[in-house]
Image (cartoon, rainbow, N blue to C red; front, top):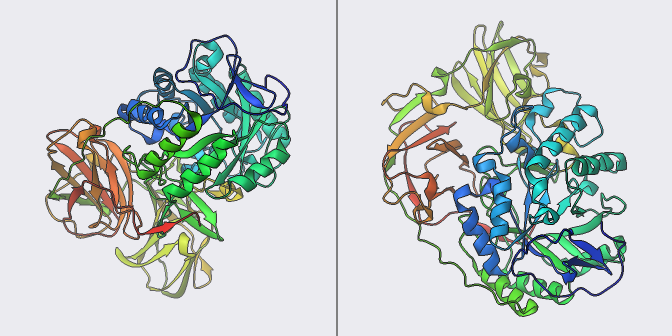
Length: 608
């Protein structure tokens, strides 16, 4: 940090563009942020490059500028960049440096949140699943099994982004150390090692900060603290920040202006007027603000996380709409217009016009006429005495099948110890029941005969991304399986990551033995731009996953609340679009369509 934190009022000044580098980072003087020798207030919005198609980054950044933001905040998702140990990908959708550069070109500074843990309702909080292959590793600790790969990540990430700090000609003004550590632990030595990894990775020319919502922050001496909270809590929470950091400056690092959704629960919203009134109060006090989220986007693929609240596992939906000012497809909402009016009024800045948004489209009659049963597409199994976890097979996502041939007649209760997360139980290929971690279902009464085949098909519904429950988030069956009180041994394990579902041996016959893969080819009246955005109606599906033209759209589940999947127009072609659906429940030949508007489910107001 550039100086000791002093008392002082915060100017309402806002930069209209990112200037040429002055050789100095953003500093703190007399209780306020200073840029180029002038008081500076951060009015930021959170937007994650991984949740927005790359082709749309600039459009969303222009929308941010038009709302009155001067800064964009983004996490950097370790698991997206190092999917396998030692192999890094910063290309295409993962080109976070290009995202930062585009923000600069649009006149926006950047707050960088590189973790290595990021939370964000993202799979395992952004930590790679391969960390869990060693059952003894302790993530978010000084355990060398975690810290060594974490330091490697921070250094490699620094090669991409450290040159983009403000004093080096870029626009990164602040770099966060870890994330909400006060809600997880108290190990200052761990936080010091993470701080050192960030600095050694090249971020020695920016302000460093920590961000927390806990009663006791996970902070470090000499590092800026910001506080996180939801709508309606600003006055009380800023009073707390004044006790944490008496000299200022005062910033809400995550102002939760919406909330995320869980499968089987309502869709959450926060009223636009309530947000606007509280935003107005904060700006009048001279506080800095980061909207979480400004634009939520989509947790494409398998990247949704999960929470453990009310002593229950709560997996998140694919949509990360978050009731943000920009909706999931990047279109402004009443909340956007309300926040824009407040920012213009309270800062006195003349804002650019709101960019026009193109129309969406609807497509009818997508018949999933090709199919193949999962049972006809199984890989070679691996034998083991006890069921093995996904991670032991270097598998991060998808399903895993456990098969056992019964060697004697037996009746009683099937008990699966530590199921992660959802299992369908089959006897001789016939589904006889379901076990669901959400509902604390781990047992089922069965009557089996000698020679019967018992199958447990287990789906990973998303790793927990917050709190101490993260420490045991391996997937599959983690403990023993017993029947009528006696342990079942000698299993066949089938690893099912579903990384190449498009090349399966499909036929035109209707699938009659679920789970099934379905495939269809269809044309799009409009394609290749935001004017072709649409929303896949999942009403005819049960539980599964959808791919489109090689892109992983995400999960479906008939329990809702989400009932559409966002389909970016830039992922569509005029002719020959290929859609692949995996469904655990549906049999036959489903017919799908798309809508012009999303269905995110029955609404409840406010954060639970």
